Structures are given as C-alpha cells and as structure tokens.
Length: 410
Image (cartoon, rainbow, N blue to C red; front, side, top):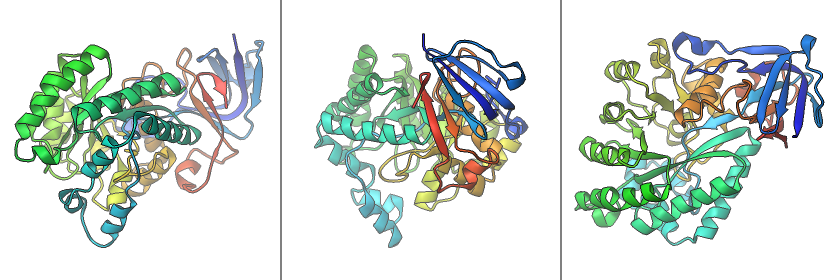
C-alpha cells in the first residue's frame, strides 16, 4: 500500500476537529505547529508533532518546511456543467441592467438553458472536466454540481448523466444535485403548474430510480419558484431519498429559508435577505446557512449578513456558486477574501466555513473537511507563507505548492 509522509509542516490546519463549527467557535482554527501527516492509501493514517514523528516506512516523503497543510476546500454549491460563457450579460450589467431585467429579456438562466439544450453530452463533459481540473489545482477536493441549465425532461437528464460521468472520471469527491426547479422555461410561463407536474411526476421518479442525484434543489425566490411550488417539489424529492438543498432569499425575503427548514434541508444557500426571524429558525434546525459572496460581488448586490448569523450562534459555510452568469469563478481562496472584506469574517472564520462547514453542507463531513485520522486524504500544501491569513490576503497569488487527492501527491 502506498504511504506518503509529510514532515516539518509549519502548521497542520484544521487538525483534530470533526464537528460543525458554529458561533464564536468559528473564530478558532486548530493548527498543529511543526507537524507531520502520514497517509496510507487514500486515507489519513496519523498526525503528530515532529518531536514524536512516526518512523514508518513510506514510499514518498515530502518536506513541508515553512508550509501549511490544509484540508482541501469543500465547495458545496456550483453549476459547472454549462455550455458557453455569458460575458455579454456582464457588459449589460456594466451598462446598468439588473440581473432580473436581463432574465426577463431571455438572458440569465434561460440563456444558459437554450445553449445547453443544443450542446452534446460529450462537449458538456469535456468543458466540465476542464473546470474540475482548474478548481482542483486551486485547492478544491470536494465539489457539489447542480443540474438546472436543462429546464426540459431530456436536457435535465443529459446534465445529470454528465455529472454521473464526472463522478466516475474525476478523482475529486463529487455530489450531484437535481435543480430542475431553477427557472420556468419560457413555454411554461403561463402554465407553471404543468412544469412543476413534469418535475414531480416524471423527472424525480426517473432520477430516483436511476440514482442520478444525491440532493434536490429549488430556486425559491422572487420571480422564480413560490413557497407552495417549492414545498411540493421538496416533498416529492424526499420520496426518492433526495434531501433538499435550497436557493433561498437571494433577491427578497422569499420564505425560502422557512420552507427549507421545514423539509430539513441540508443547506439553504445565498441568503442575502436574512433577518432575525430567519436566523432564529435556523438556530433551531440542522440546516447549514451557505453564503456565496462571489455572486453578490459579481452582481453588485448586497451581501448576506454573515456577522449577524455568526454572532447569533449559527454556523456558516462558504461556496463559490461557480456558474457562467453570476459567479464565473471557482477559486475558493478568492471566496475567503470576499468573506473577509465584505462579510466581515476573520480569516479563521472563512477557512472554517470553506472546509469543515462546507463538507457538512454537501454531506461529506465524515470523510473530508479536516485533518483527522481515517478521513480521506484530500489536502493542499501551501508555498512558504507567514500565516493562514496570507491566503485571503494574497488574493491574486498562487499560494499552493502541492495538492494531495485520494492520498496521492500531485
């Protein structure tokens, strides 16, 4: 069995912690100084201080002097299976159009859906694999990928089949989410019930029977799916073992958080519009608030109230929302920068949110998100840096020296 020994690390980050980090504890980031990590096969075997280094036979030894060893980023919200970019809409926003105005003109999600319906499965797979390699090199070791740019029976299944192929072909840990309820196709604008019927009566049963998704998502917000429509879709998903993950409260106080908590959603995501009522409800739940500052940054909308959430005792996760329209970047280190600058989070809080809490938000906390024996060995090793705060600080720099995926140094 292959053994990799990492020695002389300046710090082993997120060492020994295996639970959701919430409230004031998010400001604490456990770091084992002058440490070593022994990896056996694809799992972390043991971790310790260099004074007690384990002299076990290893096939490979990496000297991490001056470097930090991190658990890989866990990016719990992405849309990386798409066809083509949307920089024309970026220019439209520069000229003053809002995201909603662009959507009403046939842009936004409907633009991506039209392109995807005309793109072959092979082309979608190749593009998504390229993006997976890109985010892997920037430190991401686990990623959730949504459908939702199909918006038809055939195209949604095409997307989910592409995601299934990505699971089989990539060495990253991948979770698949069905997001047929991303927007209403133009032909259903006057008959919303017919589209919801198709999702509930045709797509969800097929997806459940063929194991094409891990989770079920709905965009519950102003101008998209109502609370009543969301309630029906989430209830139907549970019949096939698909736990909810919700797009909620990005554009308005939509009731999305409430319906998500009602259905025991694993996470509710976006949350730019979140008040005391929503925070109190989340405090009584097992649902992870997941914040996507890259989207607020790129769309120039207000940011979610992360400080209020954390100060009230909530955990929060961070994710990239990598997609062609509202957040065309999957670089999680940049997400931590935005969290520090605009969500008023400390570097330690941001790193907790992007590792262990992110792992919870995609259902992989038992195997990823921290450096603990018997978890999967998905890690990244920095170049020599002064502190963990250097990562969000040096937002334009490539601070990663090596990545470890499934126990293999790359």
